[in-house]
Image 1: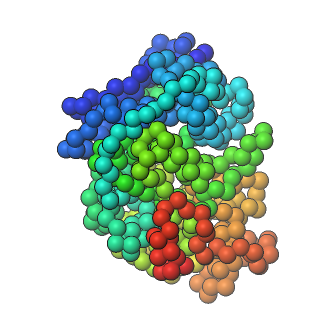
Image 2: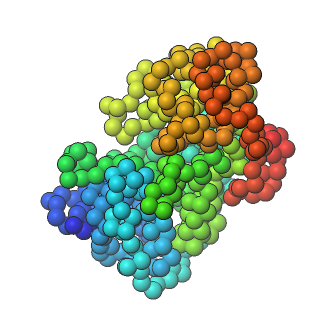
Length: 441
């Protein structure tokens, strides 16, 4: 069975972008639609930015390729050179690594090799589009994007907020922030859930942050943003485990290697002056939690870092509350905030004391590296989870918690890494870094 990249189309009147894929032995064409109509007021020439749409089309195919993960592809009329093919190999192999592990598949036979289709051609015309001194901040309504907005405010930088598919959390926190808020709507193929539930198909994680990255690239070209700003922290580089010689990292497309490679791709094939980076890259999660706790109180009633708010299948979203209080992400956010917030205030945010939720007990052991694997979620490192518990063991509010006592006795009371200082891994300008470090480190 061969996965086929069929075609894409951008309607310059409606600003709808449609992408089409199929498999050689099924009687269905997958259609995904992105609605960029929020940007119709900005003059935009699709033909001058074909390469930006092409790479978005090629990476978006991963959501449909994984259904059967046959290892075989056809690019049809679309050409890629060697560098582009190598980037796609990097994206598919690492982005599907968790999927490969969970389905017990193979990196050789179940991941496509785009270099088989590489040809010699050069992209000489990147266009002369003028980018403005304006920033596009990816907005999720969680603690991380809120901290990024606080840093931008401190730097005196203008920015717009942006998301793919809005919801009540993003909207309410954006209203508190007060910046202009834009949305692109994403509609997956109507039959994708039906195919995912077939006995002969596979299901699992895809690198959604990486897919959304190229949507942000299109948006930046439409309005002329100079910087695409993410809120991915230093902690995102810690892998969950290793499988068949490959590191499996749930947060692959939030890591520094992806950030560096997408920047290189953008500069070579899309626009030489468009930058993609995380403003939180130098921070561990603990430091982000401290800044959020000290400077973002106005967001406390409305923010959420629970991913069960953000399913594309809205029937699976939690209703009426901001945290499900059942998942690994809720457990982690509760832990990482607990050293910096009064116990009563934290319980008020979540609605209950998560350290007393029996179903999460094993999750906290996993978060501290006291189990076989790190949870497949966007969570911090083992060291910072341990340090959080160590801090709690010295805190009058928390030291008598049974969970705190049981976990702290299982590891050494000292750590050899400074988790509250800024690291030196970052892709934005040095002046910003030094000012942030001087103010917040």
